Image (cartoon, rainbow, N blue to C red; front, side, top):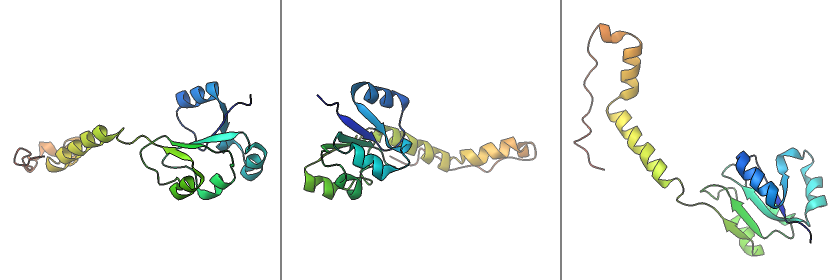
Length: 147
C-alpha cells in the first residue's frame, strides 16, 4: 500500500512536522526549488495539504494534485484556500475556528487598560527620569466603563 502523501506548504511547529512525518509521507514544499517539477513527479501520492494563514492551497496548486482529498489549515482563517475550487472538486477543508478567541479577548482587555491608563507613556516617563521633575498627568479611570 502506497503511503499517503502530505504536502506541507510552509514551515510549522517542529512537533507538528515530526508527527506528520511519522504518520505520512511528508513533503516540505519550501525545500523544493523547482516546485512545478516536484508536483508533477509526486502528484499521484499527495492526498492532503497542510497550510496556515500565510500559505494555503490556491486553485493552481489544487489543479496539479488530482488525488487531493483534504486541505487542513493550521489556524483560524481560510483566506489562502480557494474554497470554490475545493467545493468544485469535493475536497474537504478544515481549520481551527475559535482556538484563539479567549486569547484575543484577553489581549483586547490588556490593550484597553494600557490605552486608558497610558501605561506605555507612563513607563517611558519613569525610564527617562522625568518622574524626578514632576508628576505624570492623571489618566482615565477604567471603572467608569463596562465591557
